[in-house]
Length: 382
Image (cartoon, rainbow, N blue to C red):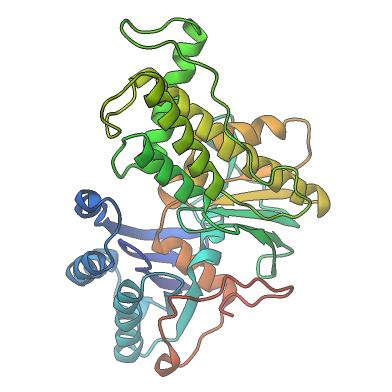
């Protein structure tokens, strides 16, 4: 079964053809991220306008080598997301479903992230499992029950997956998502719109310098003091998260360091070494909480697998920590290829395959505030 997936929930415009929920035949993504940098964040109207421009070329490239007769169904993200962006994908999918006479499947964008673990461009149908900081291939399939961590700029959620279709929500963020904490932290430290990537790179430089000479300071820089950020809700009995306090704590430390060095301008960036140290501690704080909560959920539900997904799951330090913690466990940990961690249509098509619940195209609507199903028993499309 070949499914054409369409994803336009935020600033990406994506389409993919996936066979049997596993094999990626074509996968195309266009992003307008660079357009938003001068604004300090995503501007919904700009994103939607670029998606109008990109949609037809993206579809043409995705369908190269295929005809409408080759496609068995169309899948599209209906929410959650930006209403203007969602409408581009939804109306495109409805038009194709009508003109091609194909069934259409509505997909929850958050849930679809999980299914990025089930797809591969490798025709051997092998599933990805983390090995150290790299991704290797194993023929062994994902086994259940599995704990699923969806962690991105807009969401931080934990699910238990009892089989390939049945999910139960366990907990989520009460305020900021982990990816949002990375993004806000990056801005506080003077980085542009690179968020988690900028934090990860700076943290890595700090790690290298710390190993070579922890006490050395570049000429002209003030001596660094130990920085320690909180790990919110780390020991809370629930499986919920909270990251808003991290931004406040980081801001306090940044201002304290600036005052101690008598900066005349509060907008002045800290010395590189201090930015790297703060980046390292921010990354450690966020990943400590994510790993601890996920492993707690795995223990409670006797999980045989842990599935990472969402943009933050591409973080190298997060993968290293999971791999280190699970060396003595029988639990396997899986993560998508890094290009499938962020928004993409391959995951949308894969989710639709396993969901396999079409609706009349006339009933399809964009739902920007679509619930992420915080109830005891869930259907993938609500």
